[in-house]
Image 1 (cartoon, rainbow, N blue to C red):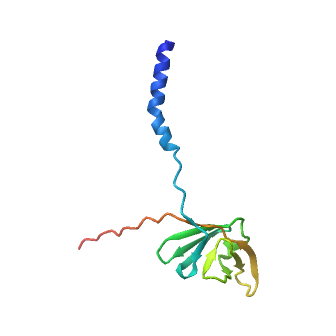
Image 2 (image 1 turned 120 degrees about the vertical axis):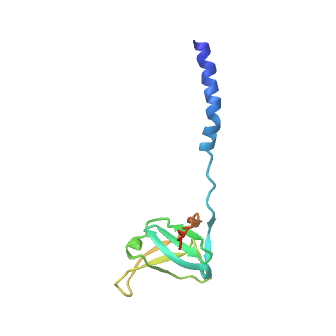
Image 3 (image 1 turned 60 degrees about the horizontal axis):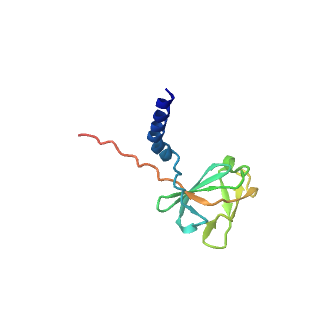
Length: 130
């Protein structure tokens, strides 16, 4: 009986090995940048207190994950920055704009690297018949 179990176990392992190897293969890391050209930034979206998405003119979206949570960023959904070069970089500091309180600035927070998000699937229009 033992002689039958060992070959059977080995054959199952040989069959399962390729599937196990495929499921543990590392995913391709996303493209990252240290800076975005300001002239290419179309808009930004505050996702939460630690995440901002920047949409570029070419339609690509780049996510900056701040090193720490930035108090008030998600609530106010507005920030400002100052830079001496025509780029926004991962070493730059943003300041939360406190809504409803002109002249009052909120927390200052450092940006993180910019990570390219996968493109959104395009919506297809339903065809109408006449």
